[in-house]
Image (tube, rainbow, N blue to C red; front, side, top):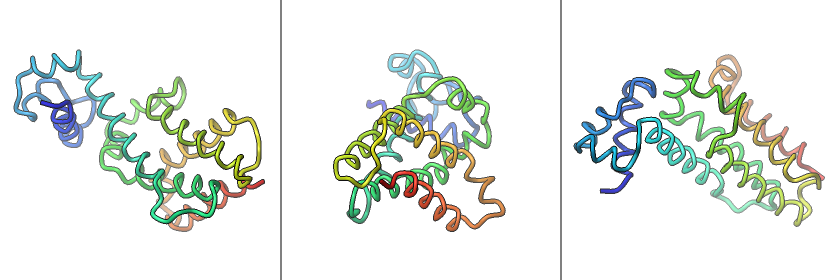
Amino acid sequence: MSDDVLLDAAKKCVLAVGVRRTTLAEIARTAKVSRMTVYRRFPDVRSVLATLMTREFGGLLQGAAEPDVEPAHFREKLVRSSTAAVAALSGDPLFRTLLDLDPELVLPYIVERLGKTQRFAEGVILHLLQAGHEDGSIRKGDLPSQARTLLLLIQSFTFSYRPATADVNEKNLMTEFAHVLDAALRP
């Protein structure tokens, strides 16, 4: 049995009751395996959920980094993939459940430390920035500082998307977001 079976079961549990109320026993029941099978792969429910979040959100970010249409340059690719990432994450049922039912679990990733998914996203941003420096479409600057700044900007839009669009047109907001990114990156 692959870990994906257990992670898929964990996802079903989180979507049904939230992160805090998901238990290892419920994950095992949903996967139709014994608790020992889960324990052999993961030491506790927290590690199952951390692996689930990394898989799910990393997959969404990976998909966002692959544009439908080939962009003219790397600045355009970075802007498009950033707006796609905000849309993908903010619309994802697992991400929404996490923010709606267990928002306090997100707080450490905003004020204390960067998680694996954030580091992955920052790596993608760093790669696109470097390529944009090389093709001349992105203004040169300190790569780590530029990447971290963009990560924080993208992250704030993602976490705040639902309240931000409560009384502002979503399409118009994302157009402005893309404009801000493009203007900030333009040489």
